[in-house]
Amino acid sequence: MTVVLLHGLGADRRQPLTLLEPMVHEILGADEVVIAPDVRAHGGFLEVGGASDFAIDRLAAEVAEAVRTSCAAGSVTAASGSDGGIRVDPDEPITIMGISMGAAIALRIALDGLLPVERAVFIRPSFDDHPVPENLRPFPVIGQVLADAGVSGAAEFQEREVYQKVAEVSPFGARALLAQFTAPDAARRAMRLVEIPRNRAFRDDAELAEFESRGIRSLVVAALRDPVHPLSIAERWAAGLAGPMLVLPARDDGPAAQAHVLTEQVGRWLRDF
Image 1 (cartoon, one colour):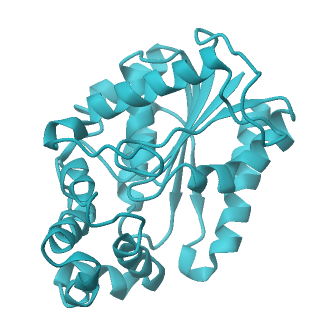
Image 2 (cartoon, one colour):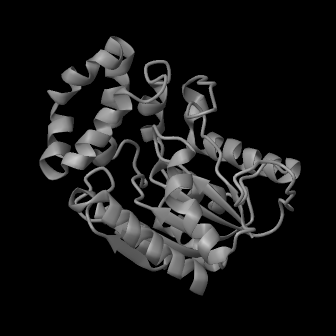
């Protein structure tokens, strides 16, 4: 089976590969095919485009096309770390795992039938059925500051209430917001931070319930004290999808400890389900 890994907003394909690929190969086998595309205006996807290009349906379609192209061309990440030479039937069932924004895109891919998803893992989901929910409000602010002042705007952003609210709850989360200013090509790509949070991951709870009727197995992964990825959103996803939810310790209690629990528990779910 092919495993597709999707990164979060402002990150790139290295994020899920570093966190999840070793676990995938340990649990599912060294020959398991892993595909981790970069989303528009992230990593190696250099084109930014216009505001409409960041609609979640379009992002999901681009990711699905990239996965199909990789399967057909054999340009996939294997255990050896080399690319090419392994061709995969793009119509075979896949497992898809997404982090934050990647979870929202993975959800759309599954619900819209863009890829034959059999299992889905949604890690720290941050999008719901409202555009720019409270937890995502820092990102359009960062995007606008980047557009106006460039990377030097980080100091200005730290004075904003949206930053300080996060910092009060999670210093680690606040540092992650500031990292958006030092991401590669951050100012040129600032539109991604403004436009992507405008998206809704799903229409309503009834749409989430379609997962169960389609026989797609799902796991939602939440974390404590994570204001950008609230537990309440993860709980809603899990309830709507009628699937289990795993709650991780807070990143502020040690990111390595959180990553260990995540890979151990997600690996167990992949092995058993």
